Amino acid sequence: MSAQLAMQHGTLGERLTDANVALSPGQVTAICGPNGAGKSTLLSALAGLEHLDSGLAMLEGRALADLPPKERARRIGYLPQSGEVAWDIAVRSVVALGRLPHGGAADDVVNAAITELALDDLADRAISTLSGGERARALLARVFAGEPEWILADEPLAALDLAHQLSLLGSLKARAANGSGVVIVLHDLALAMNHADRVVVLDQGRIAADGVPADALSVDILRRVWNVDVRWLGQPGAQALVLA
Amino acid sequence: MTRIAIILTILLAIAFPISMLAGRVWIDPESTPNASIILAELRLPRGLLAMTIGAGLGAAGASMQGYLRNPLADPGLFGIAPGAALGAVASFWLGYQASVWALPIMALLGGAGAMALLALIAGRTGGIALFTLAGLMIASLAGALTSLAISLAPNAFAMSEIVTWLMGALTDRSWRDVWLAAPLTLAGITVLAFAGRDLDALTLGDAAARSMGVDTKRLLWLLIIGIGLTVGSGVAVAGIIGFVGLIVPHLVRPFTDRRPSSLLLPSALAGALLVLVADSVVRVLPLVTELRLGIALSLIGAPFFLWLLLRMRRGELIG
Image (cartoon, rainbow over all chains, first blue to last red; front, side, top):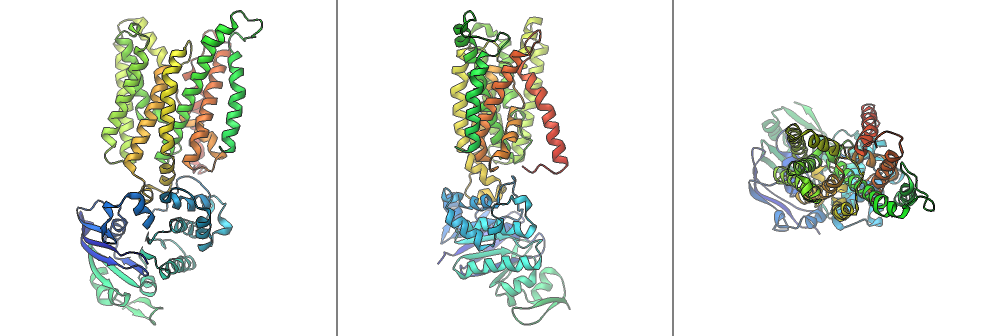
């Protein structure tokens, strides 16, 4: 079982104010909030990539800043929003980059990550020839190939069609079911409501709600944070958001 | 060793002996008078120096493009070559005739000064934008100071010496230049090789690279030291040889898997081959005076750069 990932009193300029959160492995945690609420900042701070003004990001009770970078990299996999791949390398090479924190390629692990994200037929193609959805899968496979305890992904579902969204979510949920911690920034509140085990809502750099989706994404919270009047329709696990 | 590295090594092994014989006077070892002296004291050091400088520029170009994630990056753009040139020009001023070592050592000091300035400005944050802008600023400052030194030259002869030297050439170089440039270039390429994996990680962007444990400040230092040693020592013995660092990684990239680390060695070998062949060609061309190597490579390089830009505009170039 993986260790707990936590943020204590994390503060960074205007972007994050006194954020306290302790995340458990084996779950999918969604970070939600309006544009500019500090979602990406919280995620990259949890990945140990931000120099906080005050507060600590901690893994298993140890400050991330005190972990050697390579060890931190082996334990926490991070997928940035940008999706940048500067050179037109093959999908297999992209996935193999995930092994860098371990000091080199382990073909079986790379192949397993390729298979896990259904990239077998695309493995030898150049990354530029892939569709948006295939490319997102390849980039996530890179994170999987590092075999991290924690997978932190910044809007991995953005700009994907529904089928690709669900397939990527399925892969992330499977990892969580196997004991990894999964934290994703999500814009689509219905996806968060239906698929996350826990939702952290951010508003202007502060944590506005934290709990199971039904509580953290209640209509009261949505009104307060997003300033919209909406209601949920449907059964738990298959809910849709509509204007009230 | 990858297939392209093996092929380039074989091509070098073929080109090197031919370049020994090539020149205004083609050497026939059996009949040319003093053939052994010409070979041992002129052509051999010149050929080795061409390969050394080319290898350094090729490796520097490959790592620079990897670091900036930009296929149009050239090590000459970032102040180290102009800094070294400024040092060399200063040595003309200070009377380089005083010692045969004065010019190359002043050039190395100039390159080191530019490196130090670059590290001072950009080294603390490790950011690419700051690195690029600081490099361009240093390049333009060094260029302005070089022009100032030329305009204030004590006499017409000194001015002509400076201008000619700046054009870059390997004419009349000796073993002394080889002993100066080769160890420094080799050290520089070794330092750049240590940056290879970090450059691979950088393919996925700065944040992803840091999340994979890349220490971006260490990477910046490796780049500055590696490029400083390779480019600085090249300028110290041959003047400014442009475009090699830009062209070579492009020619080689399609034959590799395009990861920056897999590009380093082939770029060094291809750089060595390009400068060796180019220097042999300028020797053979039937002109009144020998075409300066720096000019020849710029004449090839500038249209090549334009061709790259056009390809980029058509969206064909994504690395």
